[in-house]
Length: 79
Image 1: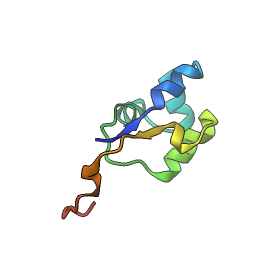
Image 2: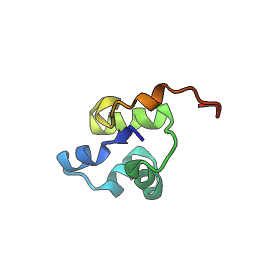
Image 3: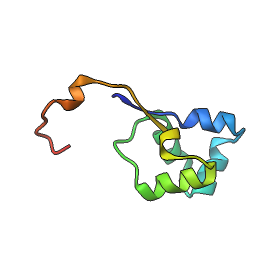
């Protein structure tokens, strides 16, 4: 998938522990771990906003995108 979660970089840069971040944001450690690993299909904007507020960042600091021409292909699965 061309969208990558780059949250780990911020966690390290800010010297945080993932479990502390999860608690402050209001997520379980499992939920945060799944997001960090990119194993989720989506994230609520409210969760993204809380992550940004706690980390003092913008959404683009948590996600990255690698250009992929297949992203422009027509899909029939509702995405």
